[in-house]
Amino acid sequence: MTTPDITRNTSLTTQDTLQKFIFDNAAVRGELVEISDTWREIQARHGYPKAVRSVLGEMVAACALLSANLKFNGSIVMQIHGDGPVRLLVVECDADLRMRATAKLAPDVEVADEATLRELVNVQGTGRFVITLDPLEKMPGQQPYQGIVPLDGDDVATVIENYMLRSEQLDTRLWVAADDKVARGLLLQKLPRHSGGEDQTKQASEAEDLETWNRAAALGGTLKHEELLSTDISTLLHRLFWEETIRVFDPLHPQFHCSCNREKVGNMLKMLGQPEVETALAELGELGINCDFCGKHYSFDKVDCAQLFAVDTAAEALIPPSGSTH
Image (cartoon, rainbow, N blue to C red):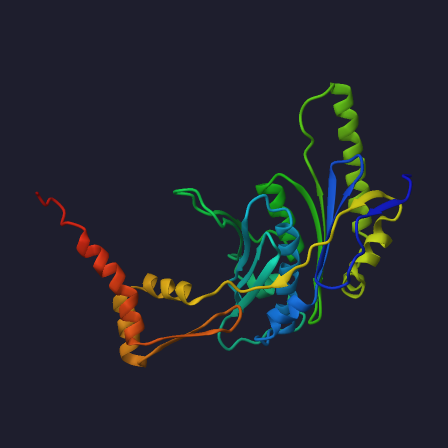
């Protein structure tokens, strides 16, 4: 048994906090998160059914936990594309833990309070899980990395664990829970050891890592769903790992942030194409677009839309026809 010793760099707060920690002398790390104010802000403009709210909240907690380990200035976009009453669940979180999330349901559906993930998004078995890593400052020609896998698991935590093992080759254990007030989660990961050193020392280190990993995962496995919902992360950290020697880092603080703006909405309209936009304008007189994440309203009249496509038209006029001579 190791000597009880939790090294704290700062006191833990109880809301909108992500706490990183590592196990001393073992390549094992952990994180705890609780999101309250941010989670209520995400829900404020939507009346999601209970089961949808729970799944989306679990994704919010999970996305924050994964984003805390980003090695670039950018964001993670986590999506579940469904074939049931829920068609899409989206959570986005950047390296500063600024978050937004939304869900889209099929028209005129009723969702049971206790509906499972399979019943919500994988009725026909064609649901899929997508993670996109999107750097803010891309190199020329660089595209966001996107991993797409089938929904392999009966809950959000299992789907993400399987994704991390297959796509990132990282042993990961995840526990998440959410209600209308809070989204909380615990993440544990067994990290790879750097190569080098004497074989005997390396084998001893790997054996110690595995022992610590198995013990930490077993302790995490004692965490019950209701306990995760009702207990702040400071208490959870002590309750689960008080016999372990761990180092705790300065806490991070998730917050709600929507990156929508008029330029992005305009670019979306341009992607639809001028004929389709003009057809919609003829029917409606003005295009009104509401952001799915924050609810902000953007209006585009005929003049606005003409300006969107005027730049492209002018640019095309500067390009000489193919085969022209000088």
